[in-house]
Every structure is written in structure tokens, then in C-alpha cells.
Image (cartoon, rainbow, N blue to C red; front, side, top):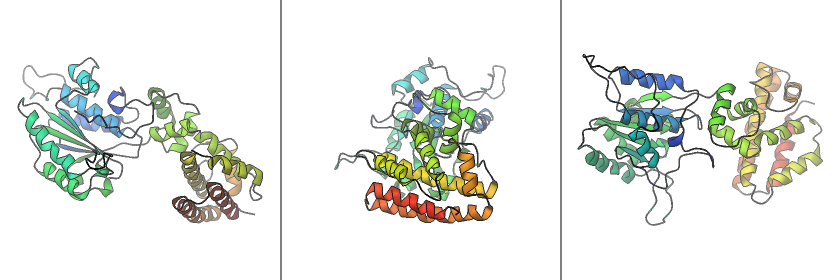
Length: 371
């Protein structure tokens, strides 16, 4: 069914999407698929879109289990069965057990493969990865059953792979369903998009986030409401924030803003040195991501008034409202944010001293603050 190297985007310790029993907050997408299935008009290609970390891979595995374990809709005859109202499949069902064990022959996952020459994982899905589906469809067609393909993720297909997949979507094998996971569907061929039905997954509310974090299998710390605000409603991003101390890092940034227009240099230096420590590359990248987010929240505060959504740090309302009290100031923050972010990313790309780069970013933010 799958390559042993297949690992979707997920946090260390979190459950594999294949093993996630419930999908939180995506009832509309599930209902749309069930409606199509129960109407007997199941499309052969489905494009699962939405931000990273909202459950696209989990939904793909739920759809695969459902399709392989559920008989086709009846024609309304004497022995017609009740139309299913949920995608849930009993974990003890033979299909569910085979999928969990990686032994379901009617399911194929397409993802990046290993380059035979370099012995490393490719950065793209190549044409041979798609062409292997021809053999899969031929081998699994003998029993007349349904076959399911998950492409995770379709954004990584190179042009030749995309064209090969397009041919399959134009002339789909009988009783085959292809599920494409895409974070950026605008980057796919328009002809691929036009031959698929789209299921768009939305971001999660704070209550849904709390439920999803509880089901993640990860020991999460931090206020789910704050995690939801900073993650943009993405469970994956919220898990990363929790495990990397993102809430504490954001709170420290907000506190430093509270010292503007006279930046607390000693406190800023301490933050810069922590971000520049050996092995702290991921934390440095997170710091700049949070800096971008903080300037966005400043701009939104000026334009719309606080809160931009909900408080994500102590005293955030007072600090952001003081530093961005008017729409004009909000526009100044928005303009400054672009230059500050570009400057920081360029500095990271050319390996400037991390501590100096953090201090430079904070100083530039201080220059944008009202006097």
C-alpha cells in the first residue's frame, strides 16, 4: 500500500493521519462527499485543499477507508441499504485493519520517492512515481473492486508528473478514486483542477482546536485559544507552537514592544542570544515568523481596533492599542512589516549573525513605533 519512507507533514509524536480516529471541524467537507456518494454520482478525482495542518491528510485516509469498506449505493430496490450518514468505519472492520497495518492492496499512496543514484528522498514527485499507478490499477482490477489513490502532496509534482496524472484524470480507470492533497491549488495545472471536485477544509475555532489538540496524541501545553489565534486555526501549526515554546516566545516579543519607543536593550539582547544559541535554528525561524505575525496584528489593530481576533499574550490589548491607535498608524505598521520581514529573511539566507539579526529587527520595529 505505502512506502515505508512515507511520512506526511506531521509533528513528532503526533498520530499518523492514517491512525487518527476523528477529524475535527471539517463537517461541511465530509457532508459534501457523503452527498455525492449517496447520490450515486461519485467523482473520480477529489482535490482536498486548505491551509497546512487543518486535517487534509486525515480526511484523505478517512475517505479511503470509507470507500474501500462501504458498498456502492443501492438503486432503491427491495433490499436497498440505508445510506451512510458518516465516514466513520469500525476500526475492527477488515479494511480498517488492513489499512492500519499497511497491507491494503486496493490503496496506493503517491509521495516523494528515493533517488536511486543519491539514495536520498527527492524534493519532488517525479513522473515515474505517477506511472507506477498504471501497474497498480492493472493488478488490482481483477477483483472488480474499487481502488483508491492518495497523492500527498500534489503541490510537489514536477511538470512531467503533473501531465502524467492529468492523463489519468482525463481517462480514469474504472472504479478508481484519486484523492489529491494540495496546500496551494493555484499552483496546480488548471486542467487538473477542472477535472477534480474540490473539498475545501477551513481553519478551526478555539473550541475545535482544543478538541483536536486533545486527540493529537501530543502532550500539549498552553492556552488553546491563544494557540488558535497564533496558528491561524491550523492544528499542525498549533502543535509546533506548543512544542517549541511559541506562546512564551510571542509573549516576550509583546513585552518588548511594551517598552517602545525606548527599547529595553538588555532584555532584547537576552532574547537575541537565546535565538542565536547553537542548535536553535528552528527557534530563530519561529521567532521571525512570530515577529511577522505580531506586526500583522499591529496593523489590524490600527485598522479594525483590538482585538484582531483574541488575545495571545498578557497585556497584548493595551500594548497593541497604544502602538497602533489609528488606521494611519496601522498602515504604517503594514508598510514597515514588508521591509522588516524582507530584511530579516535575507539576513537568514546569507547567514548573518543571528543575534545581530534579531537585534536589527527589533530596532527597525522600534523605529516604526509612534513617538
